Image (tube, rainbow, N blue to C red; front, side, top):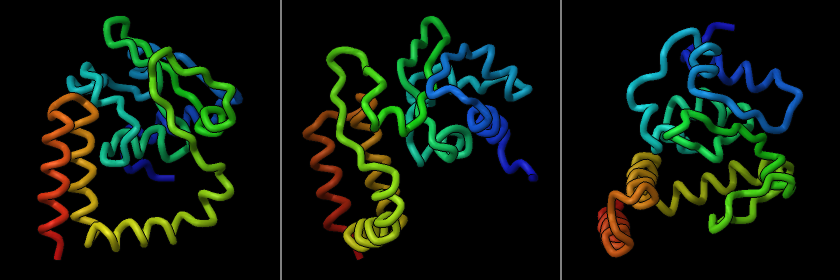
Length: 160
């Protein structure tokens, strides 16, 4: 297998684990990667479970893991198998809103239909990416809820 991204080394490492959860330091992650993390990794948004982050998509999301309990001051975080999050064995921190997830089997059966419907409503894949960028900005506190609504309405009305 030819690696497309250095973060695929992390994906291979996580995929090879028997555990459902692993706590790693940034130094340990760098050891797996064989090189230093970029400077952006020292900011919380870099560790977001977002398909718009190529490092996340190529690193942990693609093999069914998500980050959790990222402690930037300590340089430590958890990687948790998505199936463990949805089965309820993972306990999130207090005061963190969680949303129900579909089981893997129902997700895989309807994934393409759901994606087609989402893209159709957004107008195009490019528009969908624009929506996601605005939503991420809100999630990371860069814009207010009012600004989120304004940006989403603006994007919706500019659809082709």
